[in-house]
Length: 337
Image 1 (cartoon, rainbow, N blue to C red):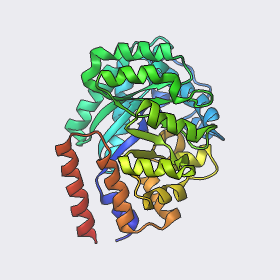
Image 2: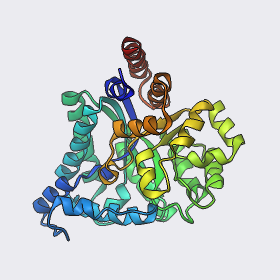
Image 3: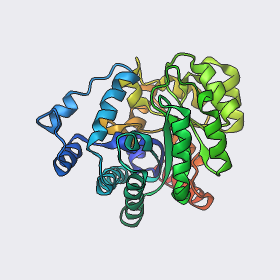
Image 4: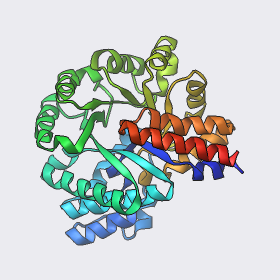
């Protein structure tokens, strides 16, 4: 039994995937035709060929441009169902799905349309694919804190559908502390808290410190630059704070996958996890990300299994389901061994 076969067989949780980042070029073309949106490409392959990112900023240009085809509730349903179907083929059982409402409301698409499409897909994915999920609403950090607060308040009628809040988009000059009041209110409303601390950003360690100490996040998204501070590494290990790392996307926006840092954190006992981020743009869903770390770091089966266990352990899934999935991971790993 190879490690690739082990990866394929294990049930998995995905904690860091942006639903807008799962918009495959073929679906983009279909939605453009449905909605009368003119694309500057003549084929889905031409769209994919145009993806050439050198850093986070250059990626975000394409990422936000792609959302212009998302206009109706069925669009968001089709987007999410396409991802859930693909995730099921990777044996994903639990997904905590990021969505960016401000990227849609800022261009005139109502919040209600966005979340109702996603919610309907969640219910159908659970019923037909066996993929359970929860939504994490992200604020765009290059917009104002006032806009983030307004979005938080707009989300409250749908509170039962949203598990947590996060912070993403361009981190440059947009530190976590900028949104402290928004996250404090989110905590009061009962939301779980997470936050992007992207790879190789200016003031990365200070941003991680703010996220941990001033915001009080329960997880860090990306976050591998934490290795620059042994004290912070020890802290997240002690507090069992998960890091949601995305090695394939790292290869597009930085000089490497950061798999060596993932392995370093794993060895240090940090609850590091592997995820796909924006797989339609970076061409790598969850299993491909695990395979990349394995190929580069020559992981043992025990290490691979621990990465998969970590994702369930730091997830916000109901305890009974989390325990059930962890038992299944251990049973399959033992059988294959």
